[in-house]
Length: 224
Image (cartoon, rainbow, N blue to C red; front, side, top):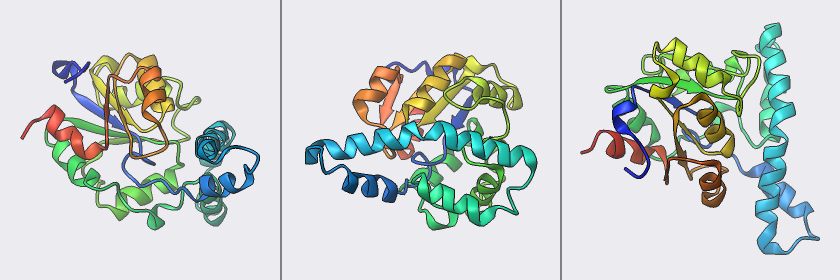
C-alpha cells in the first residue's frame, strides 16, 4: 500500500476535474500553438504550467460569483470561463474511465465528499448528471470556504461535514494543489494521473500514493 495507512481512513475527499471527469485539454493545446519559441517537447509542460498558474484568479472569481448568488444568471459566462480554463461544462465532459463505478463502490465503505474549485452550479450539475447525489455526502465548492485549495480550509470543512477528523480523510486529486491541501490539513493523499498533474511533480508535492486513476482505488483500499 506504499505509504498509505489504510486503518486511518474513514472518509474520502475527491477532486472533480481531472480526477472524476476527463479534463478538457483544448486550452493547453491552444497555448502550445503560441509557444513556437519553445522546443516542441517542452511546449506541453509549459502550457500546463500556464493553465495551473491561472487557477488562483479564476477560482477567486468563481467564489465571488457563488457568494453573490448569481451563478445561475451568469451560467453562459461561467461555462465560457470554464472552457477558457480548460474545464468544459459538466455536460460536455466524460467521466474518467471506471471512476464513477469506483466511487459508488467506495461509498459502501467510506463517507464521500466532493472538494472542487468549481462553483455550486457546476457541482450540482455533476451530481445530477451522473446520479451521485445519494453517494456524495457533502460538497465543498469555490464558495464554501474563504480560501480554496491548496489551503487546508476546504479539506477541514469537508472533514467537519463528514464528522471525522481530517487525519481520517484521504484526499484524492490530479494536481499538486490537491496534494498540498490534503497535507496541510493533516490528511493522507492519493494523486491520480488522469488529469493535469505529472508523476514527478506529484511525488515532489508529497503524495502518499500515485495511481493511474480513481478506478484503481477500490482495489487499494478494499481489495477484490
